[in-house]
Length: 308
Image 1 (cartoon, rainbow, N blue to C red):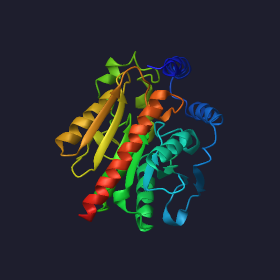
Image 2: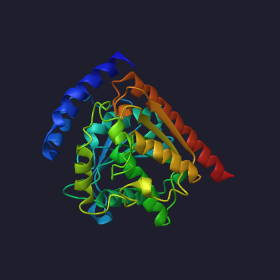
Image 3: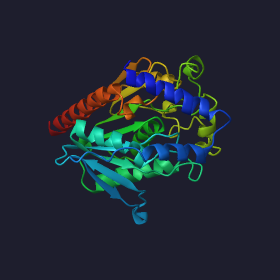
Image 4: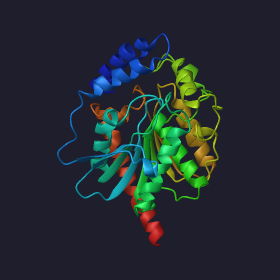
């Protein structure tokens, strides 16, 4: 573990985990991460940043492109944040870095969030943007879905909903510590409660309740772990061995492989939840490079298979 990760672990445990005792406070959480995002640097000069306003006539929420000059592929990215906080600004550095490592254009989606817009609003927004990209003539074999935490679950839900609607699948999906089980039934919710530097386990059921708004936690589009995964494209999953959502990734990986879906699970020790989104960490940059290699490989492979 790098010295940067050691320091980030200390800060997260002090500011987030210890600072979140006493129940979920939506406005406080949003204000905290938005204030942090104000200090983030602008995207590098070789990355073009293009905001995309909402298009009500098409049912499209706001989004933004982060792109290299000559993109070879497309990433449809969904930010994390428990379905109730974070957004385009908090994840802009990650998307910009991913655009560079994958030589891609990344569409980061500002989907509607709870409690103002509970499930299935986020899924509807995700599918609407997938339909829009397809309508624009984007080759699905050149697209990879991506997401972290809740956004990882949303990337899976978007593929599941697209499959049910008869839409083509992307070439693959990249998932950072995906939140796949809103029922909280994974054993690491308990066994990793002390090790996790970011989360108090008691807060996740509160966030899930905000999003579900009375719907069952086992609904497949809310908790993809309980879905039929047959027919999904290749998955690359990252998870920390010291986070309470570890079992969300390990069980997803096992179920995907049992369903005939190619899946790779990469775990790291002593790193925080969704560390690849923290580009100040050497480990994040290393794994974003691996992610870019995966995106490049899977889009090239998918294109070759389609051509054959």
